[in-house]
Image (cartoon, rainbow, N blue to C red; front, side, top):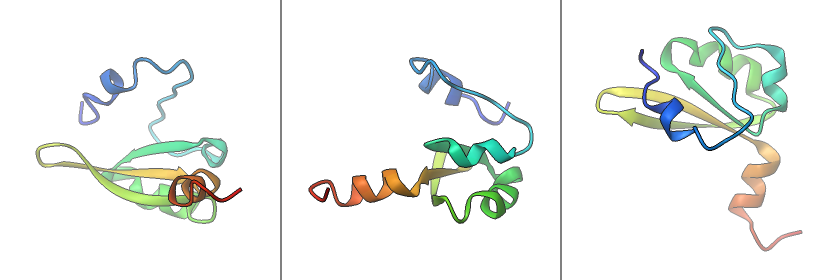
Length: 81
């Protein structure tokens, strides 16, 4: 499974879901991880709502992390209300 060890890293979170293909409700998720084979579909779905950030999962395995724009802005500008 290409996404291993992502489930291990995320095991402490109570609300986690895994999908083979992106679904519309992902727009509501604060953070979305996508493997390279679904990244283009996720880009199309999430481009207005999330900021894409390329990440490495492990050696030679890349993924995309999408952070919802409101959270991204709070992270980048923590002192602005």
